[in-house]
Length: 285
Image 1 (cartoon, one colour):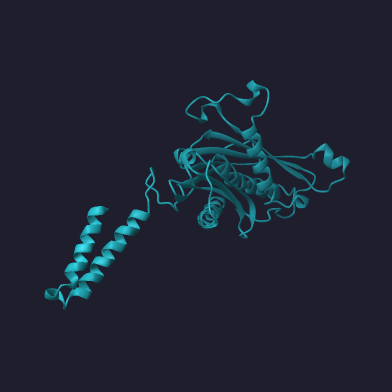
Image 2 (tube, rainbow, N blue to C red):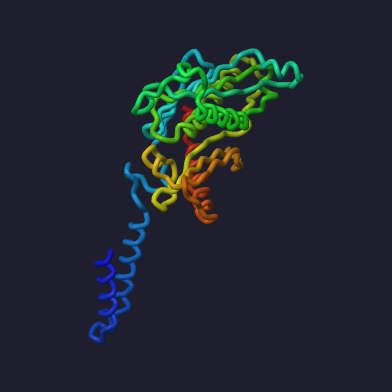
């Protein structure tokens, strides 16, 4: 930008010269406008996949992907692929019976298939236990989707949400949550059609998205290469009422300011609105 800077300095001097005194204001406004345009282009950093900082990756839902599930969808979010299936069982957990808790329950399970990553990921069963990351993510999915459901209206049933990652390119947990709500809605619709419940137990649509700071630039919906290089990583879960369900954020050997947090939240909220609209479109199709 040094050459451009020198160009604008020269243009200013020329505009102030007496031999173009009648046109100097017009010329200076023109140069100022060009300068502003170049500055805006420099600040709107294009990412490796060509997106702008505030742009989501393309998202698509393929519903009824698992015919034996009560409700299911395959969410394709950029290069991330997650199958979300919901199965409803006519039982409740023992602890609910013992404590005489009315209504039903919802629980979630999350896994990454061995071929979902560049290097084969061993199945948890071969290690004899669920890894810490998967355990944390499935608890997050459960909390998020329970916030979308009136468990009293579900009745004495257990709603199982299973999210299996076919291909991982960043944002698998947010894709799982966003897809799980679509699968849940399809499942509750089926229960109503079968007259097992009288009214929908859905409280409010729920979606999730990631944000982060990469090379000093706040960005929405990080892919894998951005995620691993981010100095700040954040996940946002919200409902259609504009209420927060969960906000996860941390600096990766870095800190972030209150203004950066505000920038990230603004990006996240705009992304959530787009995702909620995509969910509704998928459920109408």
